Image (cartoon, rainbow, N blue to C red; front, side):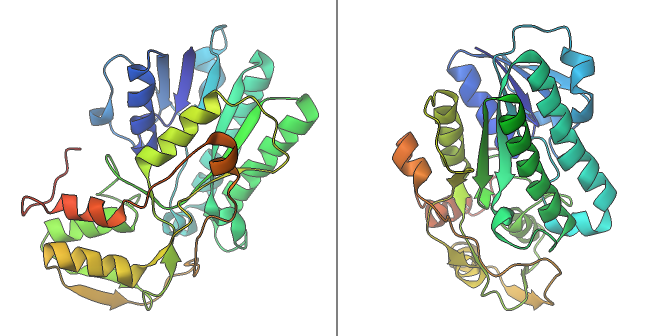
Length: 295
């Protein structure tokens, strides 16, 4: 198959592209490198540098794309408060452009949604834009009969996670802080819980969706482990393996109390078996007494 991955130089995208190339697919990537990096390029894939909104400019004359994994997006809550227009432009308008391109070409789309769907969509610009992205997918699926699958990611971690800059999530932030000999920072009281899901499990599910033929009646595939940890519990793991110190900082706007996979359809329909790898992963980061940033 010829597969287009938007955001394919980012965290999840890079792991997905590696697997697709290994499995013998022809892979093309569209990425503006706002959160991804060229150091993530995978040998055997072809990369185009541009905003996802201009997808038609690059591929309007291409007739042989079989599938689009739409992973491109700005994926953090706090930066969305500072740049709501940019968040809407990329996460909502960009998604509409991808869907409309796919509609004209008759291409199946697998869309990367978010567990923020289960919280108040007005809690942050990010949550609102991901909510709108899902609604656009439903609109195009119902109105045009398109083949569209929505996946809700839960707090993904693993190889190629972002460590530096505004787009790092909690594990990446803590890796950077330990690297820089700083205490790890915990927002609020640290009792908020997250369903941490390894990126390899996310990729496994995405690949299974490529081959999925049934038409489920539910809205989206919930891609989480079904187990969650408080931020304090994760900090305990970091302290155990790295000896780091922690400090607490004031709570932040949009910081919801809990994420946890809310349904088992992905496990039942896709025969998907996510693993709780969090402690093992954190231990591996410090196994040689220094952080590993190259995997």
